[in-house]
Amino acid sequence: MKKILFIEDNEYFLMTLKNYFHNNKDWSYTNFFTSNPLEARAVIQENPDLSMVVTDRHMPLEDGLFLAYELKETKPWIHLLMISSDLSTAQHLPPQTGFLAKPFSLPQLEERILDSILHERIRYPRQGQSL
Image 1 (cartoon, helix red, strand yellow):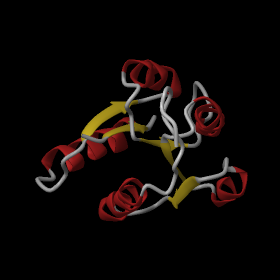
Image 2: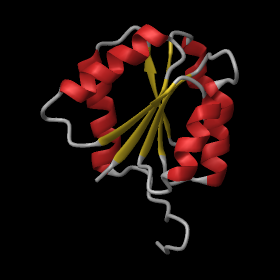
Image 3: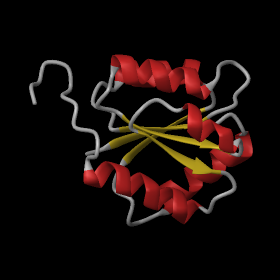
């Protein structure tokens, strides 16, 4: 089963994400929700089979863009989707990273996630695997 990590510092929006994906009967993925990249690293460490990370760009403790570059370097098989109201973010993303501009609807977010993980655009081997 695919595992998806959501990182969002806005408590209200994070709760909205939890409710949407928890109550979506068609959603068959395991979800994790954190409010900052520091918490996210613990989830990533505990779940080496993580399929995707959806992260906000601007957060108080650490920038989501920094985390995205770190993940592309250390775990290139993880799909990344950056969400931000700052449209210039799209020009600074690491390669093979998706971008979704805020505001967006939750069905739009769901569609982008499914598009990314179902089509397996990123074909990097996981640690210990070959292509």
